[in-house]
Length: 225
Image (cartoon, rainbow, N blue to C red; front, side):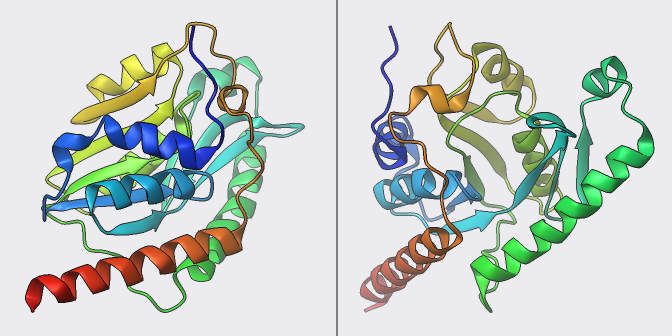
């Protein structure tokens, strides 16, 4: 039986152990989905000695059931819709546009808040390890993958500590590699597999990104010297 992770930090360390073949390679970049994916991605980037950056994607929640995704948006003006959910719930176009408009404002706010004046890490021709704290329906991750493809990476690796078995299986056809550290049969939600699953704050994201950038800059300086 699968055991719950203590927190996102522990989950990141476990996930990193499944990605050891990417350790120390100069063409590897780790991107964490904001916000909950950043603490996990931070541990992965440390273990792999790879640069870390944030990638912003926002779930489009069904009105009245925000955790139930009818789609998602991501950096690069990408939008992915779950047509099955929209059809079953008879969600009209104007509702979709209204929800998307709100989330687009939040997406822009977060990118500004997290990056300050830092330029996003270049991913063209790089192996990108795209990390989140888990995979449920996969709609947010799919939006992120679509956006990343526009930036022409050499390889996209989706990596999560825990995921729905069916969703992890589906991603085998959608990316170059999918790494789900654990795929519990009785999967209902990502949060059930964490003992501590409080919301990651904007400030925590900023601190982890800044700390990792400083560490990577120092390591690069040592290599050059």
